[in-house]
Image (cartoon, rainbow, N blue to C red; front, top):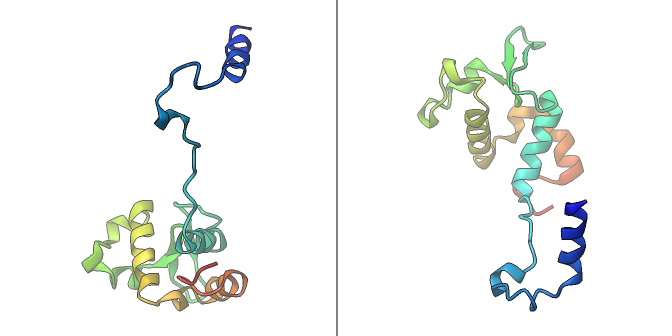
Length: 128
């Protein structure tokens, strides 16, 4: 009941009457994800439905790990960026390495999902 009264008061009283500073009166603007962030998000959905802990035996006989389905040999190619056997399922590290690989033009590492996303959204890094 009290919350209803406060809410009604808040909408009924002009902000000027409350003497609020100007910065508090500015409209709230939510950050819009970049085209790269959208593309990477769609990649995770396509590869693993966003699961960070998934481990799948791939058609080539090797396991793929995490939300971007990295295979160990490919993952370890990014040691200089911090990839190790121990952190292949680390979500933040997968985000970092995936973003790095895509920024280097390596979208074809995710051949099937990359083709699907390119068709729907355009190539990685292009404005959507």
